[in-house]
Image 1: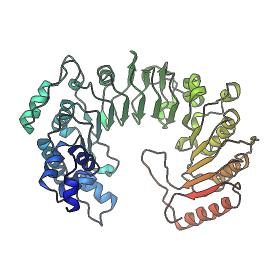
Image 2: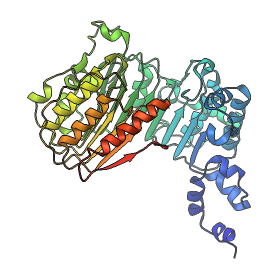
Image 3: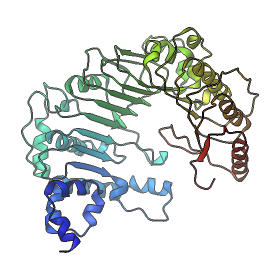
Image 4: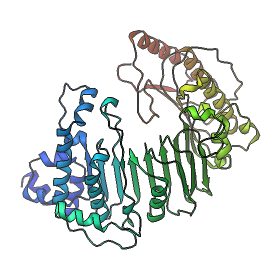
Length: 481
């Protein structure tokens, strides 16, 4: 029996697992037996990614490719593929459904039907990624798709969209729970999808089994409040919602909270399980005023993290924050030891801070090392600056710090001096990783190295090689270095 025949003889559930590992493009272009052609319509995971569906020429630059995917013919081709797959789909339930394409509000009617499809088939993970990160800024419309409140509001229901689903795709939706069409939803990821404060609250109130919520580039959120305890929510991520002024969340079982945006008022209530916290700020001009548009005082440097999250610091295992949020505060000197902190990630990428960014990282490291006896890993994300002198601070030897990651490495003297300081006190260091890319930044940008810069980076790495602790190994994460 030929190998293809042997594979085709496997049970349906095993074949579906194999098919789920392929992209839709691979499935569509493969030479499949009639049985495989039938089975792929029963996949429980549907992720539509433009890079897997549309053709990119080998000589297309990133800018050229970004412009192409925003052209009408490419967009129509993508939507046509999605519609064809949905018409053929026969699985009674969906585990995952995702749309990854820079679509905007002008395609809202069709997106509504796609979301209705996911709801009707009791999706567990829903991702709408309409981010324009790969599209040149001059070709974007900047009008985000907005979620219809009807999808989550129990009083309005989704029946009109299901009627559209049947009319457009000839798909007869399975019966819905009349009280909550999203009873199965566990993960919701929304990128460049506009939500209002009311919609955010309605999502959390209706999706009572939701465990993971990620929101990126939602421009209509201002004053977000969820006062009723959400017992299932374990992870909340809020990134670059630039109009947001206040965030209040009551989630007793929250394990991870990540925030990147302006320094706003944040209240995470009664999160006794919280062990992972990311609090990073973007510089905004209104932060220099005394109050924001809600009449609330703006958070200043040290208050942003230490003022709002002081009660949770002793239980945090992984903390991510900016040097600008330290503010030379003495809260660590006067507070309890952080016995649970194992992983500390620091960034100087707040462009408003000037040289204080890297110097702030140094001061933070010195302070955290003193109060975190079991710290295991230390990450730096550094922005290259002119070289002021590094004022050395006495730091006692640390016996538990084993791993260090430095991203945004430019090779300048201040950065090298900072790493040397770590070498001095991390006497049990085993691994240091270096990259010129900003690995912790959502845009994943890199430094464009000129020939002279490349020489400086190489020379600095050689210098570090000569000063590393005896047990340590140096790993360069960039190709060509």
